[in-house]
Image (cartoon, rainbow, N blue to C red; front, side, top):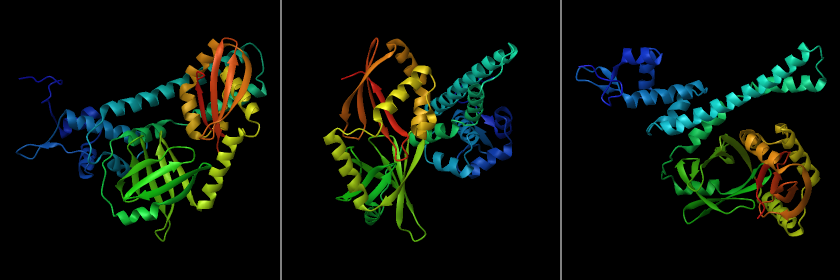
Length: 361
C-alpha cells in the first residue's frame, strides 16, 4: 500500500533520507555518533528516519549553515526536543534582514547607475555611500540570529556546589555600568546600576540563567581558576564584563545618583539627540555611533521609526525632562503633528547604548 508523506508513520531509510535531504549517509552516521540525532532501529537493526528525525536534521543543518561547529551544535541540541517554531522564526528574521539589506543596496546601485548613464559623475558622498553599502553587505545577521535562538531555548536548573556562589559574588563593569552579584541564603542575585535585583539559576558550573528574562550569564576564570569576569548573553549578543573593585561600582552609582538628583544630562546631550533625530528623518541613521546591540535593534525597527517621523512632520522643539533612575536622559520632543518622548543612554566610549522612543506620559 502506498503511504503518503504526510502520514505520521512515514519513514525513510538512511539512503533515502540522505538523498532527499541532500547529504551523505556518512554525515547521518556522524550526527548519530555525536548524539544529536537518534533514528529508530528495526528488528534487523536498520535505521529509519521519520518526521521527528527529519525535523532534527533541519535544525542541525540550519545551525551548521550559520557557521556553528558540531561541538557547538551538540551543546545546543542534546537533551532537548526540536523547536521548529523557534527555528523558523530565526530563519525568517535572518532572511528578512538579508532581503532588506539587498533591496537597499540595489536601490543605491541603481540610482548611481542612472546618474552615470545620464552623463554625471559620482560625488565623494555617492562613493562613500556606495562603499558603506558594500561593507554592510559583508555583515551577516546569521550569528546574531542563532544566538537569539540559543538564548531563547528552555533552560533546566542544576544543583551545583553552593560554595561556588562565593566565588561569583562581587562587582563587575558592563559597558560603563556596575553589575553586582550577591549571594543570599544559598541563592544568587544580580543587579545592574539603576535596575532592580533579579535572581539567577545555575545551569552548570559557571553558567547561569534568568527566569524573568531571556538572558544568561557565564563566569570566566583565569589560569589559576579565579573568577575574573562574566559574559551576559542576551538579544543575540554577548557582552563581557571584567571584575572590578567594589569602589569602582560605588563611584559609578554615586555619580548616577547625583546626575538624577541634579537633573544633569550627558555632555552635549541635546545636540546629540537633535543629530540622532535628523539622521532618522533623512532615513540615514549612523549605526557606527551606536553599540553593536543597539545598531542591530535600530536597523530592525528603522521602517517603523521612519513611518512615525514622516507622520509627525518637521521637528519643532526639544525639552529636557531629567535623568531616569537608570541613567537615561529624557526629553519631550515636539513635531508639527505631535509629540514623542525620547530617552537615550551612552556607553563608556560615547556611543549610544540605548534609545527609547514612546508617546509622552
